[in-house]
Image (cartoon, rainbow, N blue to C red; front, top):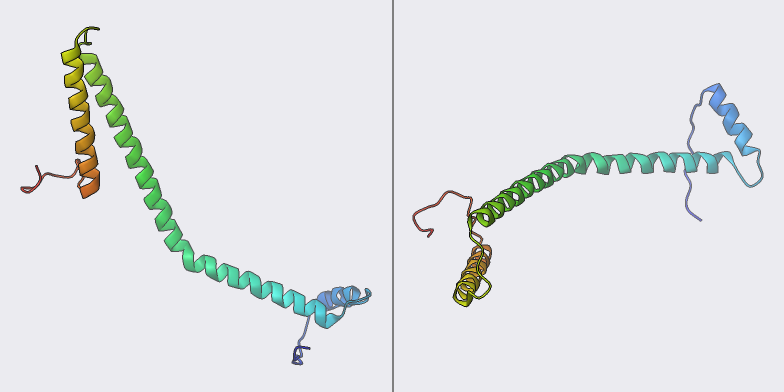
Amino acid sequence: MAQKVRHQLFLPAPLSERLEALATRPGTSKSAILADAVTAWLDRRSASALEDRFAIRLDRMNLAIGRIERDTHVVLEALALFIRFELSIQAPLAEDDQAGRALAARRFEAFVHQVRRQVATGRRTLQPMTDEQP
């Protein structure tokens, strides 16, 4: 059995009457009711303290995610517009133009290789060019 400490407290008359009414039910006591109430109140306070502690950090993370989402939409829209522009100015290849298709395949492979290299090195194309960047 857990050690119990005696406390003396004062309650307003209406609250005391409600406590008396609850304590008359079988299997309950004033001490058990008050212990449950104080435990619940303290648990709520500790949850609130955790929320207060991490709320600022979570707000910052939420703003950062919002900026990332916005930037991603801008990049995707720019890519879509660029692809649409390129497709509108390029003449389609003839069905029997094997040399043109081979050249297109090599150019596509070079493009994929360049994207892979940029992502692997961590460089970003939209950043200002420096002397050491190609």
